Length: 224
Image (cartoon, rainbow, N blue to C red; front, side, top):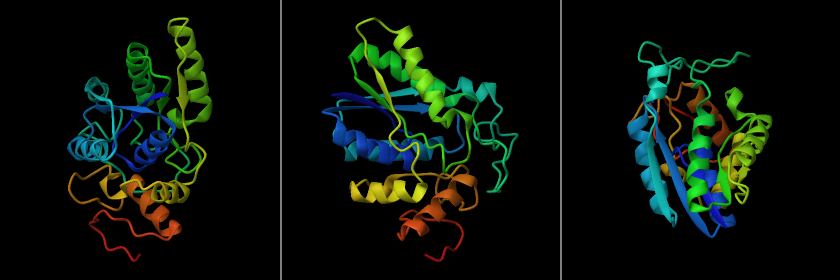
């Protein structure tokens, strides 16, 4: 079984990698640089995680046109990454249709190397509420992949943590021996996590709920 893992370097992609490692004989890692503010730190996490697991090949792709398109506080220097707030709308950190770009690039690669599965660490139920993290979206994408590839191609789109809570994801990662200390979730900083952005707050709360101490440093004091 050959699997391509979309490995950003974040917590969800790390645990998805650990799952894929158990399910596949050969792992291939795909990482995208799209002009995000923490691009340097995410690349470091990607490098650390890929060296932790045995992999067949790696593909790092520059899709900085997403920065040119803009519309996200993760890529647009004129927009500030907001602190966590409990709003019902889609946060400014949403990168328009980003995950579709990820999956389509992975699909092209999968056809060439004859991979059986594409893994993405999307989370629908306990996340920031991005529209491209919905299960229905990935089911539709899988149908599109089937229609848009050669008849003999059979690629399954795997979203193994899509209905898990963040605390469950962390516990599963610990059980699978995933190097949690290598993952990076902060949307603002490349050295010490801010502890205030949406992604940081979700991560901190999840570690607390899981009864574990987060191994990465934060700018704010946290009572574990």
